[in-house]
Length: 147
Image (cartoon, rainbow, N blue to C red; front, top):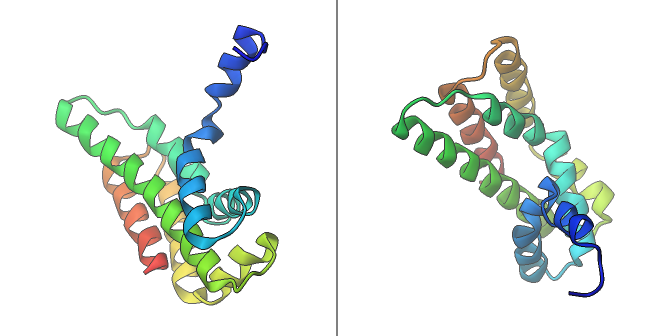
């Protein structure tokens, strides 16, 4: 409606990165930080904790039954919630720090659990084909970092 070519507007509206936009706005409001700062933290959390890889692995799981599809959707939703919780907690503990340092500080304060998570994710990657059980355990470990 604003004059952007229809196909270009559609392609931008469907970008996977925008899946986190509602959570970014929610965290920005609750933490009193800019959307830009929170976006940087969201994607740093995804990169440092391999959430992006985990989300891609979830796309590779072959769910053949209705219950498996529901369980897989629950794992995806839990991973998105984990990213939001981790980013929000990191920002709350940051005391206004630059977004580039927020995740680094957050993980440094949780060195042991973060190291265990990375080890678990490496082991999961070596398994080959992803499965629902491994992804569920990974998301559980992620969420424990925020708590």
